[in-house]
Length: 335
Image 1: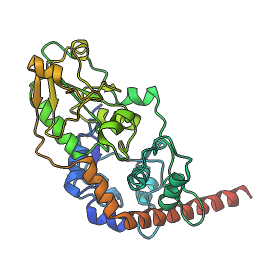
Image 2: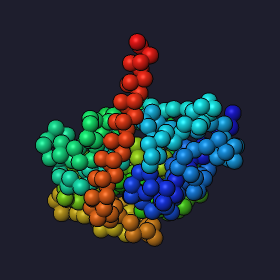
Image 3: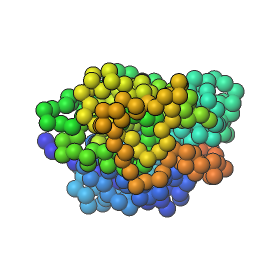
């Protein structure tokens, strides 16, 4: 059985009309989706409302969406037509993973957003970003992501390095995994004909030590799945040590250690975290040719704060109206 997964990233104009301002540009979103390892092909400029004509045009048997509701600007189900025809499939949405929550964390700018979900400041962000006037939607509302071993298994490649592979090690926060990270990892993978790229992810406390402010925006569990989803990544070390030690290099049989052109922060004791690979002559600086950073994404969100707040409140109000209508229909059937 050969299955082609076609992902249609909607044009910026359509997203703005139906959902509010997008965080990433159109070209950035196309490139990000292409980098997801389960995607075979993407359709550029896909309409927001999925029709049978669209499915037939791209020889698709059916379309798939999460179990949340997506509505047009006038409150209609965007998948109504394909649902009626039986060409719709649904996946359970991962609780705690939403653009809504990430946007809220960026605006909240507190160091405790990972653990302080019950705090009054966090509750205020919940009210602003995921609370309509008549209740709380299970789709737009904020919830906490819970990692499981099964989720990691679903994302992991499960492949060990093979003879002849070049084992390349990179480390960092990889926070708000974005196109700058993708370009860097793609450039790293091009250093060898048979690359086996291992990404070392630092724990949240370590990232906060060297980046400060409210970083990381995403906790280590969320960052793990984001990085594992990238087609250029073979393995992830969860909670990698900040210093690239001789023990780490020997354990993973690392041939090459890479770092981007961004600043290398010293370790807690002021030492160079790359001293060992530098001494061994295996440290390589890679230019991704992309200047996008996690901080610049945060600045985009802050710049559009009021638009994002209005977007989420309006979105949830529509969702709550649908929930109430569904509830009324169920009550009428029961009578």
